[in-house]
Image 1 (tube, chains in turn brown, orange):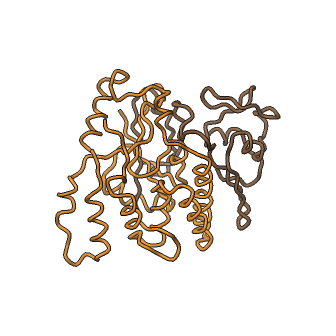
Image 2: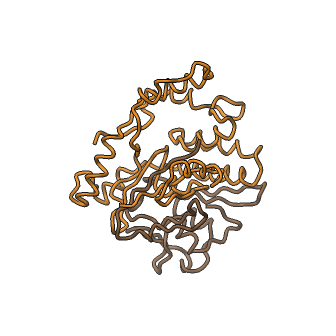
Image 3: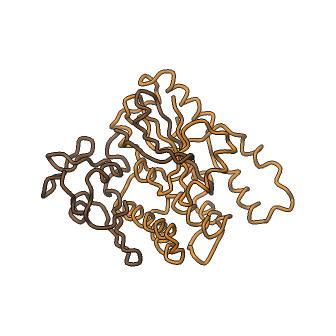
Length: 112
Length: 217
């Protein structure tokens, strides 16, 4: 996740990682990790990285930070599908949740 | 059932569009310029797929998702004589790649017909347990790859390769990380000064039969 600063917006963080801000902390599936301040407030990326086991990189050329996924487990920490949001080929934003109630097969491919 | 395709292309919609239009795709055809589905679902190669049920729950994790296609013998039968030798060598390796389109499509059809009662449907615990391991070095690889893509998109083309190389070293089994970077340096994904590896060398190193590791159905 690319960051312009170390201040994380909880909604953006949830959309990208599936970690939701709740009164008990940051939660994904059945797992919750306490945060030092209310998780609904702006999050400190360094604290989040340390508590969730996420790598945090800084690029001096462009000034951005990159917060990677949590490590030390599996690619999936829950079977609940994230609400994937990506643009389609026409530039329209697609939300996976729009297909709730139907079976979905997501298949990756590439031009290379 | 709805099929949704995701193009893992750092170069964006312009790279993917010609293929989508040539296929006449009518399903949602998404553009994943930042490879976020690598991170969210654990895709490590293409084609990889996941199944999601009516309640939004994954019932199969990321795994090879082979579409129906010609057999390798037929597909690679008529290679023009003037094809560059490197391409001939790549096609010879590609011919040895083990796929099971018939098995995959049959499994999808079974799931569509029987839903939760399909023998291919996994429980939530099984889905998580069968998803790819993500040790800390793979998480660092994901961060390095994202930074490399950012630099490439912002025009820092000389600075991106060192982060691509870092991602490759940290997660050598992730073919999308490698193929994406190799293709920027050489459309044939051959050896260049920028990278320690290339498609032909790496697939020979692991054996083409291991390109799409998958448990039997």
